[in-house]
Image (cartoon, rainbow, N blue to C red; front, side, top):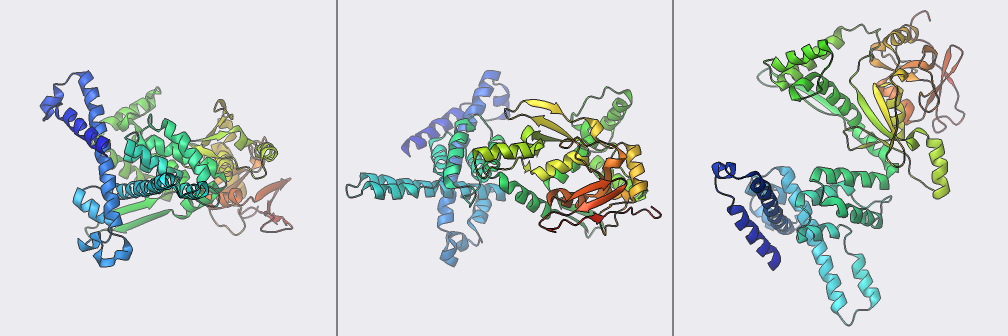
Length: 484
């Protein structure tokens, strides 16, 4: 404690020497600016450690069982986080972070004191000491690193949130091993990078749970549209990572020239980019106007037309194992009885995607697969020829008349083209005979629940999974187009 207090005093003196105005800082040479930034980061880290300790103290004195006599309640607040937010002027997220990290530090410190007391007591045998050691939280190394000044509170919260909690699939021992590996590289990463790395580690420990988390994210989606009192309309929404990346890609393609996007070499596209840069509207206004324009285009579009020829690009990153699940399963079975499933990632998004989503994205969503081997080396890049052309989609619209799924009435404009024989795994051909139209929800259902579509001549059949129909009775998929 004394050393940390002395470190804080020295850090404060070093920062004070930088100056006391913008003019003072502007006069600093480059080397001093860089050194000064490090000094400021150091003092912030120390102050945040003190803030976390204080937050833990406030949380402890505001425990729910204390009722109205709790510290936060006495001050008129419903939670310690609300008290901290009001007294510091910080965001709600910062208040929760301080309480979470501070409580973790307090728990670890209390457990370490019990172990020290047991070790110093002559009456304790090895078994009793081991029992105390087993009660030390697996997050204790995070707390010790913060106290030692080698880890910031932001990074500590990123690790805590990224690695998650102990459950049936991920034990404290597994999380402890992952944590030890993560702490060795955390000092060279910022908080965002630490979180992504921690999240990847958690996903590798619990790959079987990726599909469940993916489904939960999809179930949590919403879009609320409501009118305000002054007549304006507000949108508020939440999208699953897959759909969210498509939305981001769409608006990135529209507003890219305003945000230092791609340098266009095509003369026509370069002229369009220049026009966007010179537009008097703000970037946010351009995005809002573009959304309305997209909705108008969709509303006026021919429902018998299938779109998809020029969709915004979203890349899915997969390992070779994900594209050859049968071989991977055999290899994994030789190593251990219950090996994790393969998974991939949408470029730019830290959340992993399941094998079923990989299959569907590589089927027909304007997605290009980037295949890596087990060592992280790129093997190849998916070919554009795997996507159905605009003319092929138009032909399928005429042939299928909309989503072919039994009982679905979605028109062709609401559908995606599905490869009957998967393009990458089964060497499927991108031709009319191997493509059928499915709406997005039924395309999801087919891949996620392992339904399959087979073709005999010109007739297409839906084969249910064994879980749905043990006999896997084939269901005919006639065209929805009248007369076919």
